[in-house]
Image (cartoon, rainbow, N blue to C red; front, side, top):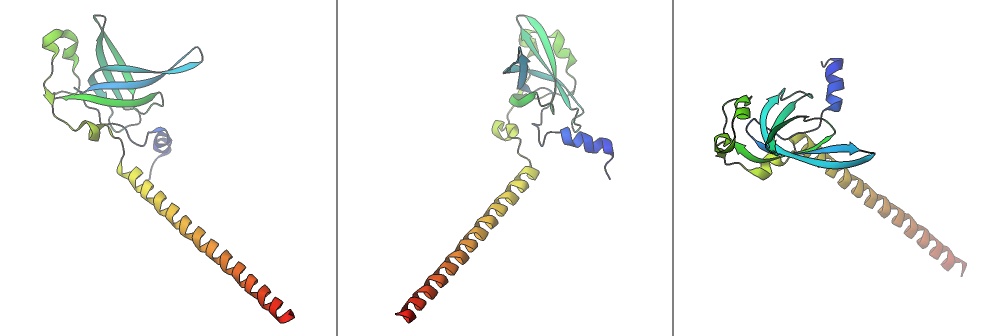
Length: 173
């Protein structure tokens, strides 16, 4: 049985998020509000840390070099402000926390790339949503069948009334 805390956490958790690992180059699409307006800002960089993978507080730390200065941002993956996380490159690393990348620049900061299926990794459909989709399709099909049966019954009633009226008309004449 789930505790009350787990139930509350489950409500705020996204249905599915991309499986991001340390060493991935990612584009994080984040919603930003400024002066009553909303816009989407894309932050592209290297994931140097992943925290609490299966929790609703799962977080990634992304690092990039902007104007010669290293900039790091942490993103909560289940936050409603994080619209999309897209993996552009996957690298082979042996650690979860790549703090040594802070001291490296230029060619020394290169990581060896790994081949991966970009479309499959970035699609966030999970089995639960597919099952729900199938269930919804079945319900729509069943509703359509019921609607057709209902219309057929109504048409049969109308035909019976028309035949009765025709018979009454013939008897009166």
